[in-house]
Amino acid sequence: MQIAVPLRSPDEVERLVRAGADEFYAGVMDDPSSGYCPNARPMPSSNLRSFEDLKESVARAGSAGVPVMFCANAPLAGWQADRLKADVLRACEAGVAGIITAEPSMLPWLARRAPGLTITAGTLAGTFNSLAVDFLAGAGAARVVLDRLLTLTEIGRLAAHAAERGVQLEAFVADIGCVHVNAVCLFHQWSAAVSEGGGGHPKAAACRVRMPLSVWERSGELFSRRVPGHEYAAADPWTYCATCSLFHLHRCGIAVAKIIGRHRPLEALASQVAMVKAYLRLLDQGELDASNYVAAGRRLHREHLGSACDASRCFYHEVRRDLRGGA
Image 1: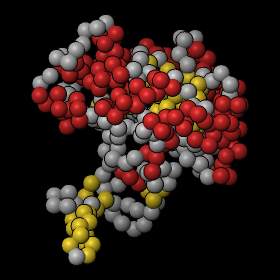
Image 2 (image 1 turned 180 degrees about the vertical axis):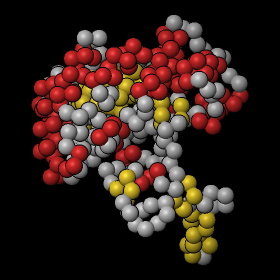
Image 3 (image 1 turned 180 degrees about the horizontal axis):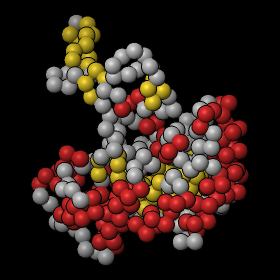
Image 4 (image 1 turned 90 degrees about the vertical axis):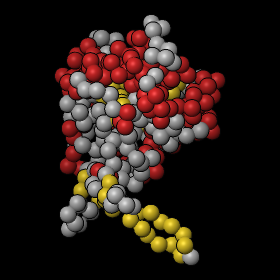
């Protein structure tokens, strides 16, 4: 199993390779003032600044035998398609090993224009079942990123099917937890006219804003009721861990463990990568089984992140059950 790690600067390559990165994924945002961003992280600080940076990153990573994937994984309006295609071709010239796209309609074009590269259907493609895997593979995808809201049981079934089709699967293992389904989230690439104090000011990352929660019930007619004790809630996508899930993901044949973290300080990201690498090393050495896989994750969490594992921050419920049971 390979570890895919986000990259924001050529200067980060050496540190992250040393931590254990097997593959990088990176976007380029070279014209922030235009509002155009070809990937799902439309913040300059989360992207490389230019295609020159991308070329340099490819060279530095390549010297360590680590490939770089180009992120073109944002939902785009029709008028942006030509620019996206131009960016993809520039990325190919920079020497990337593959392209990640959110648009299934782009897959046949990518297969024609980027032969030999690994074409990945990103999480915004919304892969929840075997039919989606078949469709994306038929359109040209060699790899598919699974939606993070699938259970480990569902992932196992999809992995068996994908193996029959010769399709690699990626699953998220760090910094996951957003309550939204990527493929149908209306907050992507938007600034919503909301703010915590009101006033209608544009707010980037609007899904992070504390919002009123209501439950709709039917009692003769629909009415809204506030959730007791949960009048406000905010999405909290940054602090959920799925390291112990690698025990299950490794067994079912997931090819790539994907770490989210283009927003994180470099050293924090490197520590996360090192923890995942250490866990995978234990798996490859045959040292983990159902009786100790959670204990190993807890130990590595403390060693690499400097804090105790918190069951409430365990992403997959199957692992959380074992965690609370003391496995």
